[in-house]
Amino acid sequence: MGEMRKITVEVPEADLAAAQDYTGAGVTETVRAALARLRSDRAQQKARSLRGKVKFSMSLEEMRYDRE
Image 1 (cartoon, rainbow, N blue to C red):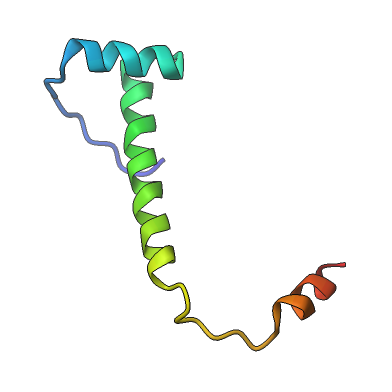
Image 2 (image 1 turned 90 degrees about the vertical axis):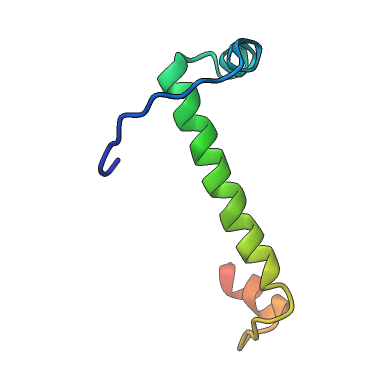
């Protein structure tokens, strides 16, 4: 998991309760899941920003054929 950092955070009780209900996990696991989700969302934004800017040496049909 890499280096860990201990933090203290004040959050609205209702938000935390709703998040824990959703994850079915404790506070630490819920906060970690939320941070991982934010990191994933950012990576997806970066990938979407490349749409139409990356040139492939194979066509989509060639890539699909190569998969078989």
